[in-house]
Every structure is written in C-alpha cells, then in structure tokens.
Amino acid sequence: MEKLRVDRINNLSTFEGIKKDWEQLYKSDSNSHVYISWLWLYSWFSTTPYKWVVLGVKNEYTSTYVAFLPLTIYNRGSFGIYPIREIVYGGKPISIYSGFLCSPDFEFIAIRLLASYIQSNLSWDIFHFNATKDPRLGTFLDAFPNSKFSVEVSKSLSSLCITLPDDYQTYLSHYIGKRTRKMIRVTTKYIKENERYKITYSTANTIDGDVDALCELWFSRWQKKREVKWHRNTLHHFFENNLLRLSIIWDGEIAVSAAAGLIDPENKTYNAYITSYNPDYSKISPGTVLGAENIKLAIEQGYKYYDFARGLDPYKQSFGPKEYQTKNVSIKRKRLKTALTLMMMKQVKSVFKKLLK
Image 1 (cartoon, one colour):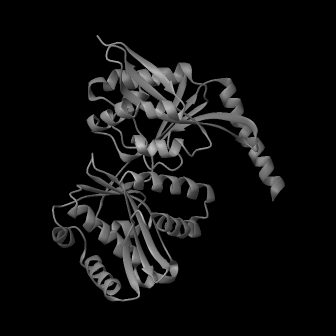
Image 2 (cartoon, rainbow, N blue to C red):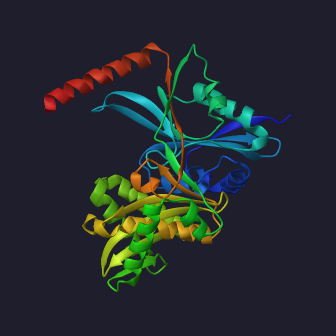
Image 3 (cartoon, rainbow, N blue to C red):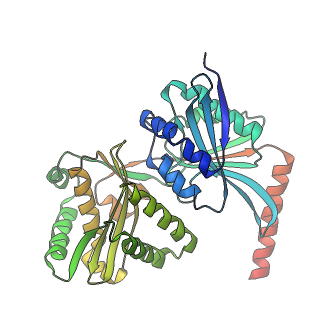
C-alpha cells in the first residue's frame, strides 16, 4: 500500500521544480482546466502580493506527486482591525474556476488527506472555494466534521460553454438563431470589406502593443488598476508559451474591440478570458464579430469546447452555449474566537461607514 504525505510548496523555485509532475497530473485528470494549469498558477504566483502555498500529496514509494491544491492566504479585517485569517483558491481573484488536481488512482484518499491537512496544519478562520465544477468537491467537504466546522454550499454564477461541431457552417446553421446568424453575416462583412477596419491576431512583433490596447479597453470599463497588472502578466506568459489567442479590430490606430482566449490543447478547450470594446463603435457590434471569428478559429483548429466562463451576459447567450452550474463553498471554524472576530469586524465596519458618510 502506498504511503502518502503532504508537502507545502511556497516559493517559485520549488514550484518550478514540480512542473513535470504537475503537467503529468493535468493530462491524467479528467477534471483539469486551464485555471489549475501550472502556467496559469505560475503567472499568478509570480505577480501576487499575497501569501500563497501549494499543498502537494506525494507518493513516498514513487517520489511523485499524486495531487495538488493551490491556496492563497489573506488576513482580512475592517480597516486593519480584528483580522480574519482567510484561505481561498490559489488564483483568486482572477481565476474563473477553482478545483483540485489529482491522479484518478488516488482521488478519494488524496483529497481527504488534503482536507485533513488543512484542518490541522494551517492557521485559518474561513476557507473559501469559489466557482468549482469539480465533482470531487463532496469528498473534500465530507472530511470536515460538523462538530468543528460550519460548511455552506451555494450556487455561483452560471457558466456558458459551447460543445463545438466539426465545421463552422454546421455551427451557424444549428447552434444559433436566425437573428444572430444574420447579425454575424452582416457585421462581419461590413468590417472585413471596409478599408478603415482590420482584424489582427497577435504576433511576436505586435504582442506588447496588443496587450496594451486590450488592457486599456478593459480598464476604461472596469477601472481596476491592480487587476490590469495581473491580467497583463498572464497574457504575456500565455503568449510566450503559444497558448494565447489575442484578436483586435482596429479603426486605423484606434482599438475598436479586443478579445483574449487561453488555449488548453490537452482538454481541447478555447477559454474566453478577457474581452472589451470601445463603446463609440457599439453600432457595428465589434464584439459579435470577434466572438464569431474566434469560434470559427477554434473549430478550424480542432477544439471541442468554447468556454465563455461565468456570467449569463446576453451577448454570450446569443452564440448558443449551454448553461452549467458551479458551486461556492464557505467553511468556518466553530470556535468562539472566530465567531467573536467576525462579529467585531462587522461592528467596526458599520461604525467606520457611518463616520465616513
């Protein structure tokens, strides 16, 4: 019988050293996704200002890892007072999904071992696992006894995904409605036949300017300066590994719309990552054009899934995806210290809000 132990990996050099084991597990795990890939997490760990740790379950007889769980650790509080120790999935806040990475031969024992280690060897008050579609979540949660922990499971934002056909014409004919089909045909023709517009795909010569253009469009809409830095880092890492598809519609030197997709060849999935557009051009529906062009490209390159990620935005739904549900999990320790800290945090936050009005 194999003997398993849990290792803590909390620096980039050690994380680099487990890349081979990580990628082997990624290939063998049918529940893997791009947001638990080694490259995604490396781009996050190399940028994040927060403390992080990867829990790795190692088979001591073979000296190989059979499971991984990446985590980020926060000390949260109201204006720095009464901090709560919080553990979240490793890529939060920019990861779309969370989950485990585990060998099919060790799923039950390894996932329960991770849960046991988290309970006994990490200091925390609240554990959050957001937007997971991993069916092994129940195995993990069953390892937290009701006498010591309060476990809450709720629905997160629904996600949208297209199971792609073998050719683009089949997609146009059977996956979308007549109105959307007409819009794609008319707007695509208008942009491609109008000399003022051009559609480009990033190359080594253009990637720096293209990433800047996408991030500027995205920031103008969301105004999240810190997240722009994180997204910029991720986009460059994926491009360097030929796993980024960044397309832009230009009006001369003006970026009209941009869309970045993260490619997962192992799971044959095109992951829509960041899209944004200049609202001055909304009448020509540039987002619809780029969406259709990228779906076409994904089909032509043999991908089987086009994942729009979370959110039921009307423009996503117009492309004919299927909806599926992910889950949020919150685990709290049942102890007086945690309860009192949460209560005092709430009171302090309420007082400061009143003072700041």
